[in-house]
Image (cartoon, rainbow, N blue to C red):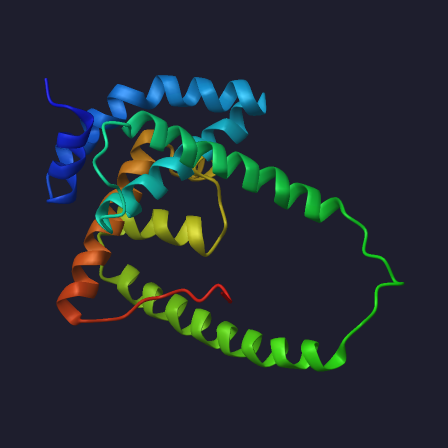
Length: 195
């Protein structure tokens, strides 16, 4: 039986079946952990899918170092997504205070960089949309629904009448194909998050 690190290395080198083995090995434990933490099946499904999208991206970008702790790494990604979800939810519910001092000059400086960031993001999303048109239809549908319609994987699965695992699989293959096209065409795609 192959170790997690061996499977990760195989997947990073293009063996997609190796990822399927990892997914089968950990999907039940990971979903249980997420569901136990958030107590909402639909939210747990979304975070589960987002976790594996991040795992796919990080492995393909060679951002996993073999340490024999794949399960802990996987769980940490899910945990961070859960924290991000609750932070965002708290920010949406927070009330701003009017008595906070306002620094116009710093705001103008950040506005300039925010505008530049927005332009870069718009160009990148436009480039990604162009790449999507080159994907097989079933893959481009999932990418478009996820990133341009902001649909959850549960909503995508329900809309397309497929399982969540099929939606995740289509996203995975779309990312693989887009990464290949970007490499072949020597395109630089970087979403600027203002950092």
